[in-house]
Image (tube, rainbow, N blue to C red):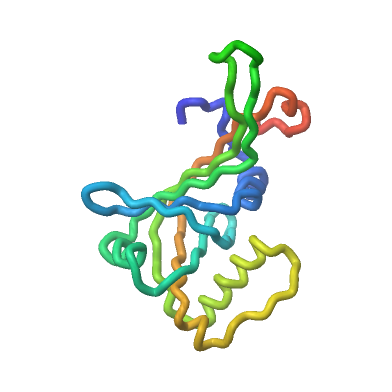
Length: 170
């Protein structure tokens, strides 16, 4: 990471960034170019290991590409805000928080694990609302991809007017 002063090192703050993001971009190997797709996600932490879950069809380009090579990269970002500088163009900037990671993707087949993944996804997106899951037959027909990150880095650029409101990560 080139801008070390923007790196987030505290696990609690990294977890906060993941909680605040609602779209992850999943990058996979394809020819002649990489393939990237934005998707909603659920997640689970086990100590400092982050596992993401996405849902979709059991067939298609994502499933085919992951069958060829399960290595993936992900990117998520949130808390965007333009940092204005009047008429001085080079002083403009952009506030954000982001996480970039690398890992392996697995297609989940087990019905109970699919239910757990869908529960995590709903918990992340819906927040404490009551909802009913479809019948097991429908869940079995849903594609679920589990992404276990082997490494990740997190960073932020804080709006100068909000510097004092955010705890230091040093």
